[in-house]
Image (cartoon, rainbow, N blue to C red; front, side, top):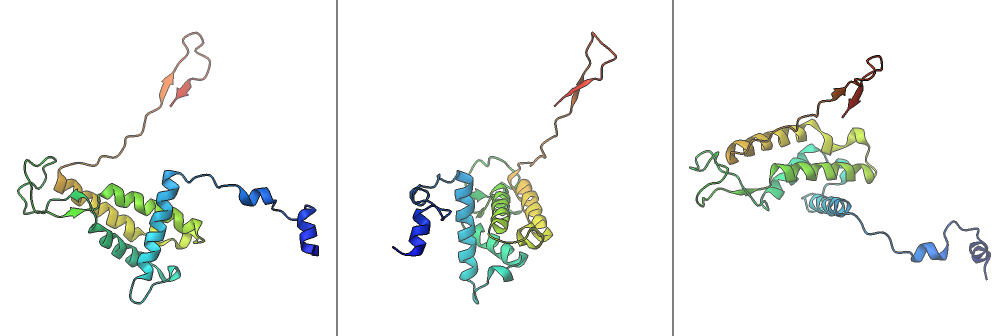
Length: 177
């Protein structure tokens, strides 16, 4: 038995044999999707001619990636010349393209932004948080809203309601949210 093995069996190692054989907890749906998205984006960068390393990646590569993904979309987005433009539920079929829905793109960017930082990128240099990406997403949202006749409304913040205790007016009022 070597000295290293003696240390491991004597407890000198930080890992026990039981730790190595323990199955990992299954990833959540979000974590699985984030990993899948990160791998897909990495593969996209590798397939570029010439290949792009993650350190060279910038917002333009991300915008190209989103454009590439658009071809796999399932959301009908009517063109300006379409008779169904602006109708939320068109009565018939049309030849307008299927696109990635704005909400899907927004969620994808959120997952990739988190994955970038989890894989060693700094928040300050995160290309997924670039202003050009936010502008692009806003434009897609507005365009799809008009084309599909579905307004995207901001969620309203809940207002705080003050409750005054009728028994004692001198107590400070309680606020519920």
